[in-house]
Length: 326
Figure 1 (spheres, rainbow, N blue to C red):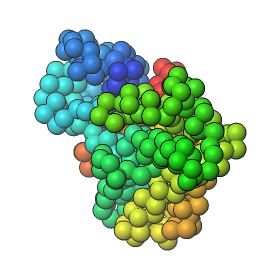
Figure 2: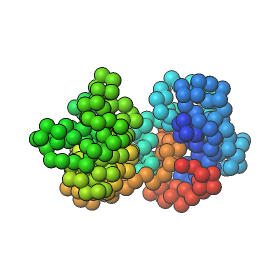
Figure 3: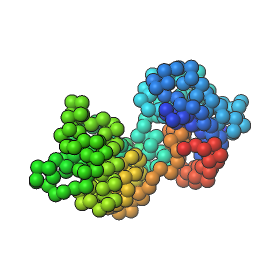
Figure 4: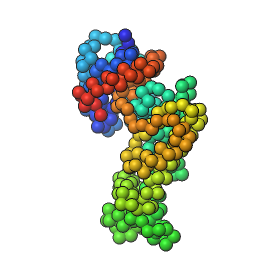
């Protein structure tokens, strides 16, 4: 039997799982934050990793077992970091998980599928049964990433300016925005923006206002959210088409803050995706990120997730609740 470890590290904490080559989750561990650049303390960084991994190994009662591979998923981590991680991770092979691949694993548990990740940027990633993969989105610049929280915020402000100029319909977004930002005029708010750019907190606030206005029936806000869902669905549809998965039943997963905006985004997303692939399954995350990383570790040692392994993994997922893995 071979064993692998999957690790999810962030400023909120570190989680690790130990999985065998049949897909069985044997142990899990949780510890403190493990993002070195935020901690500014490499010793604490390594201790967080060691504590989480040690707890997972201890729970599995495999202190003397040989670990074939470990995959670490961590924001902003680079491949060269694997060398720095080596003292903390008792594995023969250590890899840094590619964010999109790990996220897809949390959706499809290693099976073919597509994941759309929508926060301040938008990226979609898909893999078919021939192991062909494509990434779309992730432009991180003006004019790209339609459907992102930033794009929603910009379009919301545009709706407000159009109302003020008399070329757009009234929207609840405008008075709610002015009240929240404690300004009397939209220009006063925009003048506060450095180089005309919204801060992360501004973007979050505007998105929350759009969600609230939509819940109150505001037409402009509802249109913004429906359009965001359509934009995101178009990315998924593009991948399904290019990977020739339209006639199959792949999982299409949704990850990120935009999808938590409510049913208008998801409804529009589903409608757009199902036009391209009527039989696909729209799902949220099926497993924590640490499990997605463990699946990547299994792939690193040549173990593919077969249906029996997926079923075994699903059946053993409840064990993670004992250690409150997010």
